[in-house]
Image 1 (cartoon, rainbow, N blue to C red):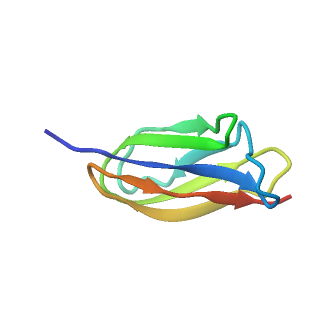
Image 2: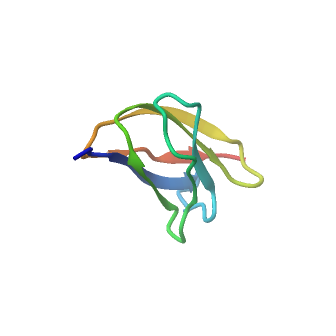
Amino acid sequence: MIEFGSISGVVSDITGRAVVDAAVFIVGDCPEHPDILVLTDMNGHYLLDHLAGGLYIVMVYAEGKKPLNAEIVVEPGHNSRLDFVISY
């Protein structure tokens, strides 16, 4: 059985308030992954799941704010935490 990992976290602004409906997605193609774009919930939380192990670049975009990206390693069978603080 193949194990997959996930990336989850919270998107907030510089005041600490949750950013609702921010788009969070993986860019690039290494490792190979399904096309996933999720929106943050009312608390700024997001989850990207069913990911093979490897190094990913995650991007977040919210209207009127600066887009950000960050690298994170996903290990099969584990969740990797990645929070974003975005500014105007």
